[in-house]
Image 1 (spheres, rainbow, N blue to C red):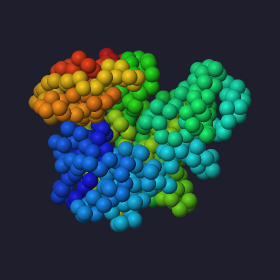
Image 2 (cartoon, one colour):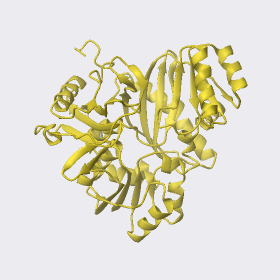
Image 3 (tube, rainbow, N blue to C red):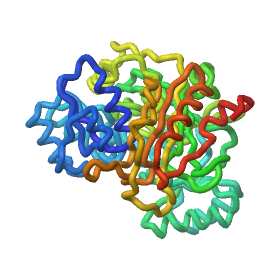
Image 4 (cartoon, helix red, strand yellow):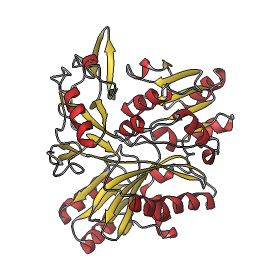
Amino acid sequence: MKVLLLGSGGREHALAWKLAQSRSLSAFYASPGSPGIAEHAQLVEGIPLSAHGGIVAWCQQNRIDLVVVGPEAPLVAGLVDRLAAVGIPAFGPTAAAARLEGSKLFTKDLCAANGIPTAAYARCTSMDEARAFIREQGAPVVVKADGLMAGKGVVVAQTVEEAEEAASQVFAGGGTEVLIEEFMEGEEASLFALVDGETVVPFGSAQDHKRAFDGDLGPNTGGMGAYSPAPVLTPELERRALDEIVIPTARAMVAAGTPYRGVLYAGLMLTATGPKLVEYNCRFGDPECQVLMPRLAGDLLEILHATATGRLAQVKVDWSPRSAITVVYAARGYPDAYPTGTEIGNLAAAADGDPEVLVFQAGTRRIGDRLVANGGRVLNVTATGDDLAAARDRAYGAIARIDWPGGFYRTDIGWRALKGDGA
């Protein structure tokens, strides 16, 4: 099978590493790729992710059998629709189905219409309307921009004034609607499922760390680390989340004539009354994908192709019982302004011969024989172990061997699951 992987981050490096192991793979390409992805796939140059016509034409010329779309923007913009129109299967939803991520308001309305548990909310089309609802709701309250915001379009406001300022910034930035939600108490977890219409197959759980600094302090980021599985998402809670949230969503999308195909990533709040949906993403999480792939025991290519072609019920998904953890090594200053071009040394020594250590490159480039930082989140140092504590110790041992003065990382990834275990 000839495969094209789209994307360049740590998520895509993890997917490339796993796809390259498939027995069904005959040719493997990636665009735009990265130095890490280039270790597994041939990079295609000169076709930006936004050039959908160019991507489709290249796939036709090279007889690609499956396109795996890593990031969300091409999905929301309709790349899968363009590929389907010429008969090329793609792993990912159509533009209509990708509204589950592309529009938070669309998802909230779908939940309300189908009795799917989520936070109470209001959609406000003016600042006056937003201000009135915020003052009626009180604080804390959650303010969200409607569209794609790279995981950072959410403000959990602790005061009414902070909430009003967040809503004002959405409208000042060109937004025409703002979503205001009740604040939900509980612990967050991520549940992944593969969907090919009405068939839903659970695909692992994880917890990530959004805040920049130890102790869950500092600004929100795209994610500073993650681990899988998430012990807090017990088998009973996972079953409830599937039965009450994910499966009804898949059925509602089919009923609307916009069946969902791809991975559906449900951000959950585990409240006192059960799991509630925080939001959906229509692609693998980043850095959650980096802890799912090392635990997947099956053939990823066969699984993704079956999902894309409506044969999900025919494949088996097997998981290792082992734990995985990833620590994000980010550029100093992230998520605010940060320098690029700082040199990363000793990367090959990180694993120190340990096959259970992997370093996925999230934001790097090569200048001659030098590997340099080229983004905010730069490396994902990942490890597996018999339990989470063993995986954590292995990952932090590996990250300590990397020579990168321009980077920083949290030292407490996994603390929720490791409370009372020396974390």
